Length: 189
Ligand SMILES: Cc1cc2nc3c(=O)[nH]c(=O)nc-3n(C[C@H](O)[C@H](O)[C@H](O)COP(=O)(O)O)c2cc1C
Image (cartoon, rainbow, N blue to C red; front, side):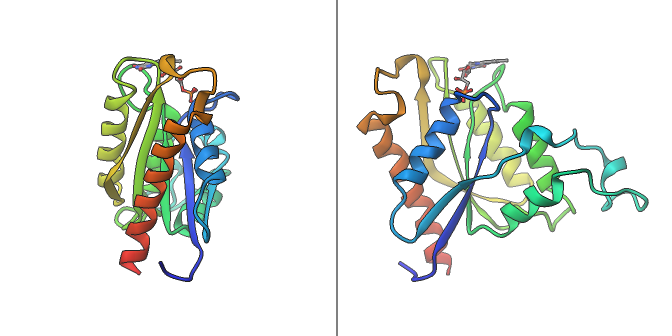
């Protein structure tokens, strides 16, 4: 592995305080290998809905809305991105899609450009949010990110036992996902 610290930022697709997806990222952070940090990008819920009228890359008189620059800088400065998202009505939660839209601009030069991205998630239904992860990957790809397809964790929340995300089997999957993402960074370095 490279001696450089690997910085992974995480986008969480749920704003819920007790979010299982947030907890998955916390597991990723707590169990990250030496030399790897995992940090949640906060503030996604405070971003206003994307509009080309409010985007300086499409409207000359626009000023970037509050929080967008910080979220973009966090992602742009990271080596890789971990997305942890539930499924809402069969697809990506709006808060995550909105963040991806802001991160996708300026067109062709957004913060996700060429960034390795792994998508994991937890959802209630029997397919554990598979549609949401698939749609998230599609959107990230179109936004310029490099989706690491082998990163795949889908936790069915209704099947979580008393230990919740502290279940060793869950931790093992999350650690494997982070390791795969780190491999992508270090191989590319
Ligand atoms: C508006 C809404 C829509 C949902 N739609 C789905 C769905 O399509 N598929 C699914 O598996 N779970 C669905 N759920 C359940 C979420 O997956 C579940 O609440 C999940 O734990 C939320 O993630 P969190 O714990 O990170 O907040 C939905 C929940 C909400 C609030």
